[in-house]
Amino acid sequence: MSARILVVDDVIPNVKILEAKLSVEYYDVITAYNGADALKIALEQQPDLILLDVMMPQMDGFEVCQRLKADNKTAHIPVVMVTALSEAADRIQGLESGADDFLTKPVDDMALFARVKSLLRLKMMMDEFRLREETSSEMGVISMSDRKEEAIQRARILVIDDNEYSVRMMKEIYAETYDITLEPNMEEAQVLLRGGDYDLAVISLDSSNYDPLRLCSKIRSLEETRQLPILTLVDESDKDKLIKGMEIGVNDYVMRPIDANELIVRTRTQILRKQYQDRLRHNFHRSMELAVTDSLTGLYNRRYMSNHLDAILQRAKLDYKPVCVMILDIDFFKRVNDTHGHHVGDEVIKEFSLRIGASVRGIDLACRYGGEEFVVVMPDTNLSVASTVSERLRRQISEVPFSVSKGTLELNLTCSIGVTVSGESESSDSLLKRADKALYKAKRDGRNRVVVAPSNVEVFERPHGIAAR
Ligand code: GH3
Ligand code: MG
Image (cartoon, rainbow, N blue to C red; front, side, top):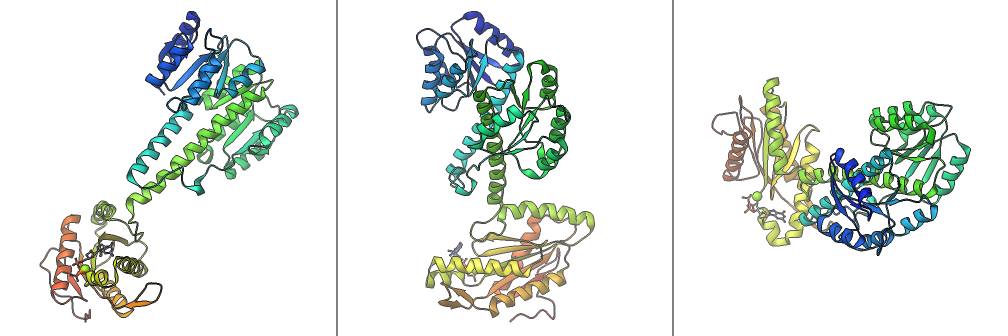
């Protein structure tokens, strides 16, 4: 994960040390030696993360952070406060000024990279989210944040820890903001995780009654929990375990004795990232749905059908199975619009779609091809069956009046249908063209009828026994 990181410190060697460490990991480092420069560079160069020294002459780190967070153009950039003092008061002030995390000098490598990675991941999700938000609103489709039902829910945390002191502390800290489940037993925890839909697992690495690393690796290997963030609680003396944990895929850690503020910010970062990620995925599926279906009828749209018909034809060719295509067009539809208005026209189109949907099989592909023109693709179907289906559908349209305007108006409508079957190695274009020709003939011959076109030969009248009126 490459990213641009702004390092701010008034002491040149401090900047150089961080710059060297980060460059080795291929981060692109930019530097500033005072608060004013930091603000200017942050605005102009839009770094992905800022490591900000607290104690600087003129403008200190708290003030710089406050100003960054107050400006819309820099507020989204995560800020890590780097402080010489590990005083709790400093952390509280850092939080109040809007910092996203803390590091204590001298900066430990593991801490540095854990904080950097975890905040960069969060920023990546948020950036992607903002970008899609912009694109969708430009396209006039969905707005992710406007959708109330998708509002971020109260997050759920599973705590796996058998240390009474830290469990009590977490209960206190989390209770107000999160739903928390405590489970000191590893086997039970695994059962909960598989079915639980959690947003974060907090796992103590120094438990005596289970192997925490095995649990972490299980979480990473199972499909249901692969994306679940893991925050570990670790004893200073257990650094080796932590290193292994980070290799397995632990997302972040808090050292014991637990500092409440650290626990709060790191929990928040992991949960936010998970929730942004979930929303992105959810919206991806939604926009896929929107991209392939027609908004008025809910049927597939023309673009999807064209793409999919090719795939169907290829598969059919391998299986030596015929594919039938039916094109339907409402007769004299313009009159409905002209006489009763567009609104009634829309209602008719919807009802027409429902009738198509009701009379085809699950594997058939029904799509709105154009204004009042529809296509049904029927895989593994011969022409005689397709003719019967077409004729049944034609009757269902013409024999049952369309009830519109909340039942105050009944319209008698008919449709014309062209139906054909795929020939050997036929393209979707030529198949659709032949069906369309058959439809045209049905119109020309007086409408309210089915015209059947066998494969790769001239269109001819429907076979005997398929009655048209
Ligand atoms: P034909 O029997 O030859 O098919 O005659 P027709 O009137 O059905 O066909 P024509 O192509 O002359 O008119 C189709 C009309 O359908 C014109 C267009 O305004 C209307 N239309 C297309 N899409 C929609 C839609 O989404 N809603 C409504 N209400 N009308 C639509
Ligand atoms: Mg028409």
